[in-house]
Image (cartoon, rainbow, N blue to C red):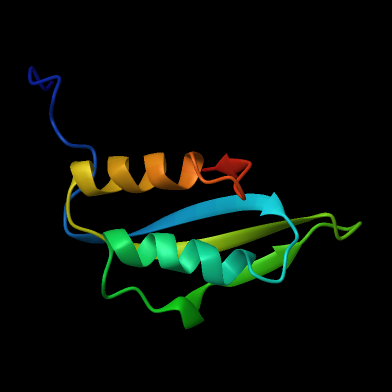
Length: 90
């Protein structure tokens, strides 16, 4: 039993998957890659996996970032969640 409630659940550094969803747009993946690069300068945009919804209205991007800290991930989630092209970040 751990008594430290603030104990990290993730061992940093690590590769951390993030899913980003938004309306289908030709610039969506490139735009999101630029946001990721601000928080993970070594990010390789060619690793983004893109899936389009059955009707083609929405796209989901699976992105794996190199997470170095909880602060970095928190800032990245805030940047992605507040971006006008993004509907959901998981």
